[in-house]
Image 1 (cartoon, one colour):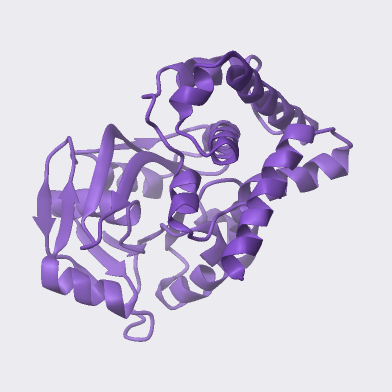
Image 2 (image 1 turned 60 degrees about the horizontal axis):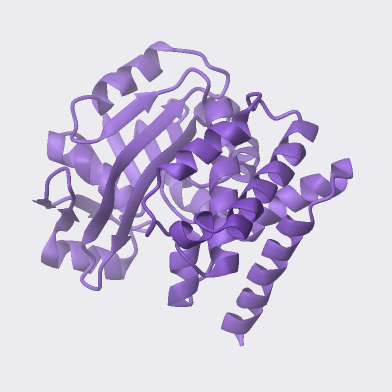
Length: 306
């Protein structure tokens, strides 16, 4: 099975690297600078689950139009429009697309542009970053990639993919309820990214103060109300469950959005918090804390664009 991964960064590089390490046919679609880096240094993984130096196949968008069986989108949401067009030459009617973007809004765009049956749900949990030499540094033991048919079907093609993804040093998991799992992750990461970015702090100091914990709970509840108004398939008691997950996070845990803020990089404010605010306006849900978080992020975007 031929696998194409758009992006060889902290997410695509890590999970693609684990598949390549197993011996699967993996190609990375990358820009010229990253391609040169991979040719020079290899794909370097530094992880609690085992280090590796791999030598992957790489292509650029203008260098090939060969078909692939599976295409992973491992890019930031603000690159989605370009990513959709970049992968188009490699897509055939049998190709399955697995996006690993945060949030939900991108699923609407992908399923409108390509055949809805081709676009699986996908998400991942990994704390990783690139160092200055392009090595992928995994900063905690968490590393799971979840995928599944949008409507929960377990087709022969999906079973074949599940088999290909098995036996690696990371956890690839087939979900039969990927929509619910993606909405639950959306609730969690939007709250955590929002509160850590607003406070400019890792989760520990926020969680371990009375007012900080109150703000976390409030943001969870505001987003839950939006999702319930939208009839998203979230479970009863999900906020309590996610607060329990939050309790288990290391005190020094930072959201990827906070790390991007600290670097002066672009952020996914519109795709995460912004999309929820559009839904809140549609359903008349009051979200004062979410609005404050979003305004804080938009001011940051103004400042870095000057």
